[in-house]
Amino acid sequence: EFRRVLFRSPGPFTTELPMAEPLAVTNDRPTFHPAKLELTASGWTVRPLPWGGAPDLRGLQPADALLALPAADARYDPGQPAPVMVLN
Image 1 (cartoon, rainbow, N blue to C red):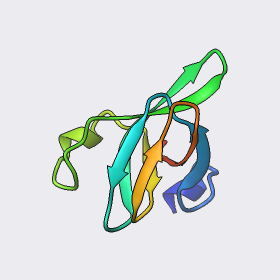
Image 2: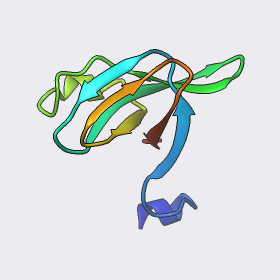
Image 3: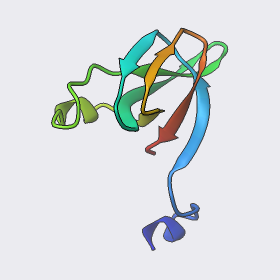
């Protein structure tokens, strides 16, 4: 209901954005890693935030996006597109 009042479609907005810095992770299930969107001279990028896993609620506080990471070993290099869920 609230998203309709704001003229936004229901559900999260997802896209792919280039990584601002490298990230290597090993996950046994899909993981949503807190991240920060950054506007650079060449466009939007996403920067992973320090995070201690699911119980780390303080790691979510500065986040305006989540990296949607697969249930597997994953490595993202700077400039490589990564799946992002925008929280705004």
